[in-house]
Amino acid sequence: MRILFVAVLFLSLISACGRFANEDQKQDQEKRVVVIAKQYNEIIWALGAEQDIVAVDVSSTYPPEIKDLPTIGYHRALSAEAVLAARPTMIIHDNNIGPEHVVRQLEDLKIPMKVFETSATDIPTTKALMVEMGQYFNKQEQARELCDQLDKDMETALASVRTDVPRPKILVIHFGQASNIYLVITGNSTAAKIIDWAGGDMAVTGDRGYEAIVSGSRSCIRSGYHFPYRFRLRPVGHTGKDYGITGCGRNHRRQKWPYLPG
Image (cartoon, rainbow, N blue to C red; front, side, top):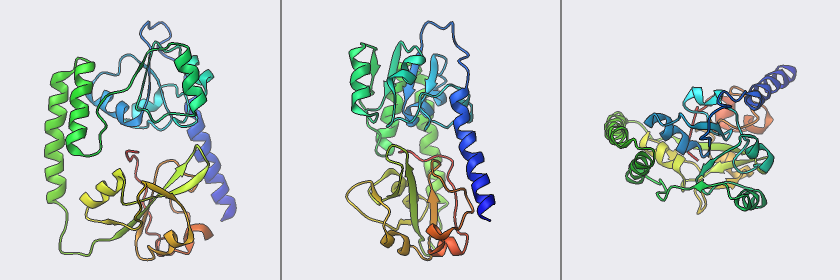
């Protein structure tokens, strides 16, 4: 079983690393935009404004075709060399990039940078961000359509939540690549809003959006579900000693979400 786990882990890491070998298919393009924010990229593709994007961060995985672009690395562990290799004429980011000395290097090089003013923290501000980005990319009509579709989708989703069953407690675990540690996502997070809309409750509370994993966070969900973020070192279905002590590990009640906002 351990050999199988190591093999699956190795293959998953090789698959992730494969994105770094993606070739630049837009070598001759004069306008070269690097976007370092997964939520920005998802909206850009939904707007149909991706034609000038030449590279993205490795956390940007949706829509699937975005993974065909070269990646400049993890947004919190960037290197100036990787970013400059994309030859950007514009860098778009959400002020959640690092480390600080790399950001200073990029600023010193006077590469134009864009951060959208709207910080999306709920449905109204998400729609406001779509509108702002639609104006920036000259996709105003598409932005309005996206906002309307979001309202319809939310109405449908909320109407489908069952109220005749107990609300499960959910533990969401994120692998923090910048520090190489596992983090528990708390009730003060975007993920908590999604869980609430789906009819569940977060198993861990806290003032910050995440906490380092401790034994208490494992035992608090003995009858709950565990939703790992995409970026983690445990393949779905693994029930080793680290998660096997919980109810979700013993009963295989584990799911993987393809994408969660950060």
